[in-house]
Length: 269
Image (tube, rainbow, N blue to C red; front, side, top):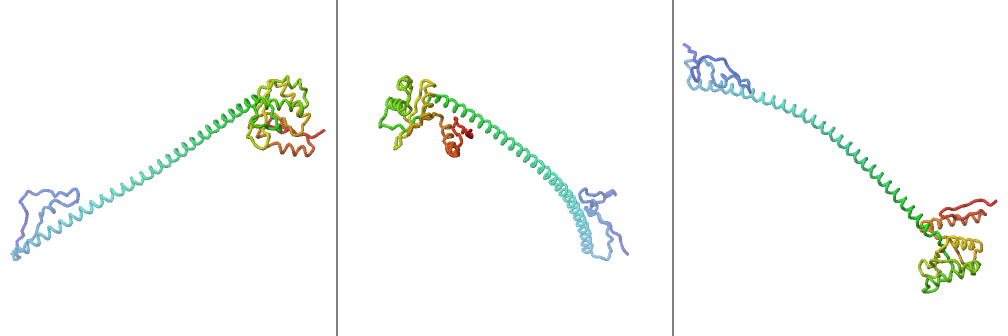
């Protein structure tokens, strides 16, 4: 004769089986409420082992279900996170591109602004230099430079003026009375002392006296004595550069002369 045995931890009113939210396992399976048919001829130990095996199988099934659910949720989370990171990376790249473009534009604007300011400064410096050069040449307007007059040791300004007046009467053949009537504000040597006689710079009080002496020098062209206008360093350097061209033009039979810082060349009629 066989007997059907119902094993339960407690005798409870029959309830609807519930499932775990995380794993989907029934509460009945987890609690061990299981119907097992026991043969009255079987041993008690075999019955207990079978009951434990049934509970173990149910627990493993629930555990595997829970692990699968957790893995599914982790996979979903990883996919969403990867998508978010990708979108964030694209956004950062776009932002970096905008920053680079703005930085490049700002740098270009700064460079252009500095270049413009530099050009303005260069223009201002050039204007100032022209103004200073003009003022210097105006201050030398009544000056003449005498070259070729022997240089005496420890020569004073009075001695230099006396030597200039002597050359104006002897070399330029100007009347002595006219030379004595000229007012010379200053006559001094310029340059370093050496084997060559230094230039004497003469400042006349009257511009007309300066023009008279210069005209006589161009007319007489005395040997060894040279009389020229006195200009600023810039103009003097420019005239020195143009001198070979002037000499070449004269060798070609043309009329050539220097006018301030310009070379004038024309054919003879």
